[in-house]
Structure formats: structure tokens, C-alpha cells
Image 1 (cartoon, one colour):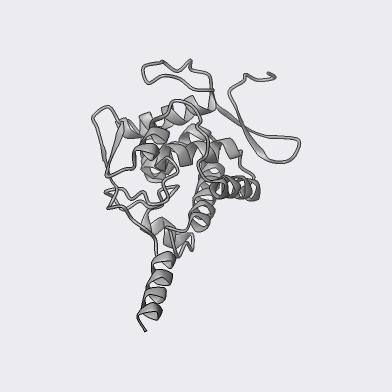
Image 2 (cartoon, rainbow, N blue to C red):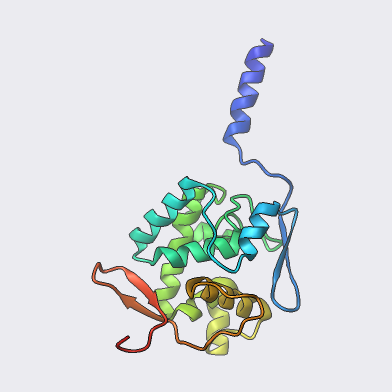
Length: 211
């Protein structure tokens, strides 16, 4: 009987999300997010100034799959995941944002994500939301700002809102897409444009017109 109980307990444990304590996120005055109880390796990935290796092949596959399904550049999806959670499937912000792409509860419900802790559901929902914002604003920086601060904030300020967190968020993702930059580097001001490539997938470019 005791063996049966132990076996059932093991199954229940394996089926439930495993949390190493609640991961809480606060934002410094300079816009840098600080997570409490965040695994050191996830924090290092989240704060890296260049793309890092995706630690889980399954997550890498999900990013590639759902980027293709949404006609998104997989590098953009990868950058969002890296900056949002550092590939930590258990990340939970103090505002309640959950998982790899940090979905808010209301957004998750709207996107029919029933289990935000499921990497597959989280990336499916997060990419759907990102695609919606790109289609709505037609501009990568505005879409990223809306992903971070909400579309209403972007509309209210007619551009990237003057919030330190949001500006740092957009800057960080641009740095990743541009090949990396240090925290103190200045952006070169090149416009980020959305183009549709020969394969009909949306691509992000910083080249000028005709280049």
C-alpha cells in the first residue's frame, strides 16, 4: 500500500508545475527589472547583452514552430523570451505575469491559454499577442512597447511611453537584434522596419530603404 501511495504522489508531483519559490520582479528607477528568487542562470540569460544559447531544445523548437505559424521572425520571439524571463518557465512577476513570455492573467484568458505554465501554451499565446500588436501598430518598437506597457499606453503617448522600464525593454531587444550592445552603449538611431521576405514571413531589418 505504501508503494502505491508513493507512486501516486510521484505522478502528481510530476504533473504539477514545480516552483522554487515565487519569482517576484521589481523595476529600478533606470528601468532595469530585478527578479527576487530568480535562478542565477535565468537572471544571467535575461540580463545578457547578446543572444544566449536556448537552454532547452523543446523551448527552441516551440519558438521556431510558433514564429513560423504566426509569420514572425523567430529572432524577435527569441529576444522577447530572453528579455522577459531568461527562458525560466516558472517566472512570475509581482504584477502576475507568468511563464516564458510573461503573460498577464487577463491576456492569457483572452488568448485561450488555460495553463500559462505550459511552455507550449505560453509561447503559443505570447506569439499570438505579439503578432496582433505588430499588425496593429506596424512598427516593431511600438509593438514591443505595447507588449511591455500595454497598447493603450502607446496610443495615449502616440509612441513609446516615457516609462523607464518600457524604454529599457525596447532598447534591450533592439540591442539583441542589432547584434548586441553593452548597457551603457547608445543606440545608433537606425530605424527598425518590418518587411515581408520572399518566403512570406515577416522580417525585422535596420537597413535603410533599398539597403
